[in-house]
Length: 185
Length: 185
DNA sequence: GTCTATAAAGCGATAGAC
DNA sequence: GTCTATCGCTTTATAGAC
Image (cartoon, rainbow over all chains, first blue to last red; front, side, top):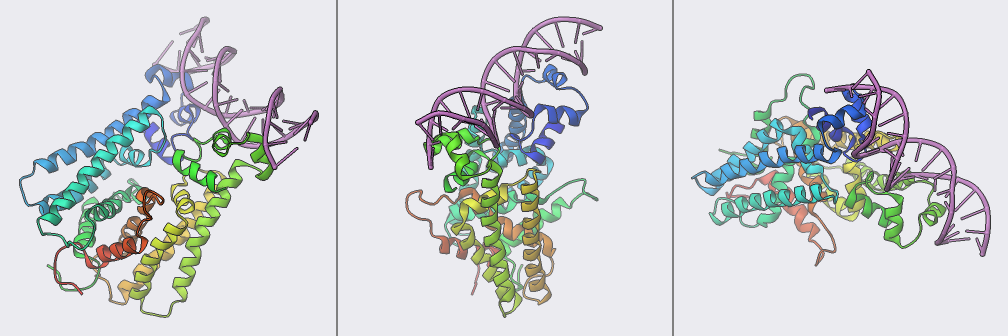
């Protein structure tokens, strides 16, 4: 299962054949089908892990009793930790684009996650904590576009383990305080 | 050609068969092969358009005679315009992950682009225009991860044309000035 | 639980008529 | 310049021996 997600991410789900996967695992194709009913089932399980992790994060964010700006900051930073902890699965989630039933359902769940993130931003603007001269939906897309980009370049095991907390702090710093050299809190 | 890139982006290059493309164009499979030597050739041309546009942008950025911070700001905002102008092609560039010769070469060229963007950030930090407490390479990945994210949600023709200049300004505002409500220039 | 062998369908690409 | 028909190969998945 772990190997499957890894190979799907390396070469793409459609470009990976069960024979490729079997070779990678050092067994024959048929051996895989004894444990797994289909290739699509592997994809479904992987997507479920990634989407489940994201959903649980947002559920916890919703339950936090604090100002919207604090909830947003917390969610942004925790998103980085969730992405890092479930990197292969979430990477697959962000790359799904097909139109099989499994993929369509995954896209639906992902859109729901994105909608909740947009609400967090909207609330923070309404509260007066964020600059109001920018469209909240656009800000949400940019903010979590930045977070999601780490599936493109975060490669654990590549030498020493990456400093996930450092990345979370950097994203928070860039997004909320900006890059310009100036007096900040 | 235009239709091919669009369909590749919708369903993925590997998941799109020449028969799919033929159906979309309202002709038979063979008719396509009269104009195009192979499926991979379509991909190559599309990737070339996207990568060419990005390379030209960076070449122009390199020639600009101004402080590094201004060059970086200019490049970030112009990137948005280049992405919007060549959206299908650049989207395909950002999604390439296979290991055919065409795709490997595209990945090489993309890495070169990313390296140049990182240099722009590094120069701005060295110049003292950007906060120095963050790793320049990380900042570069976040900054252009935010820019590139617009291939995920910018869909022209979806009602009215999107306000590309507004998006460019918003990205610049978020990245350089930050989201916090405070006194800004 | 893993193997070899194979079925059934789909793939990229070609042949040759019109 | 487009068509029908088909080649050669790969795909997902199964059958049946061990």
